[in-house]
Image 1 (cartoon, one colour):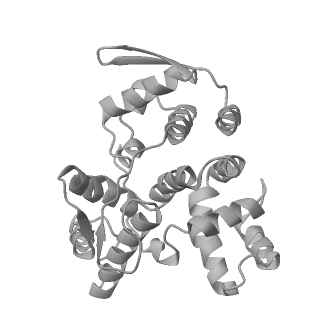
Image 2 (cartoon, helix red, strand yellow; image 1 turned 90 degrees about the horizontal axis):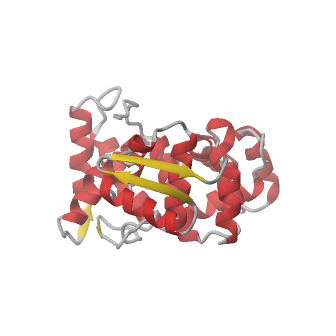
Length: 262
């Protein structure tokens, strides 16, 4: 399940952008392209401190690659949930979609953040991120070698993004405290169903890389699935290494309706 998409510097266009994403979801409607959304956002008056060029970068380089993929399905689902789901839950979903669009962030969370977390470290530094970036470059994860300045900047983007998504302490600093971070039940339900509807088998679903963004190994994911079963969202049968799930919702829209009511 290795993602061979090369690492890029795209996070420089915007880190977590939690509030901006919520506003853009509010302005977006199904079928709207990134260029159309940019014009609507410009005319809305809801970004008074953002220049037109900066707003275009946010929409085209950040929002679109994260949420307008798959015919805008992520945007449609998050928009339907944004009124009822807590900001903390929405932020966890933003982490998933941002990590898919930016593999360098996903790998940093999986291999550095959770390694530090499990090792009882209290902080992650930009130097830790820099070591990770350098290793990625040495391993051929970028199309070409990055300059010293680019490596330093991207290292800061990685820790800053983790802070935006509630995993590290916020603020401008080179060393950030690690914060407690646990997947919420609503996010576990969303992710399980979204992976299922993408065509992933029940057994493969348990070891999908997206769960590792939350520090979850196969056994942890199975426990989350069992909790969803207790809530009546699905039925799970586990025997040894084989798992069978009866999915009770027929599509993501039906699941979002349930999550909005709970």
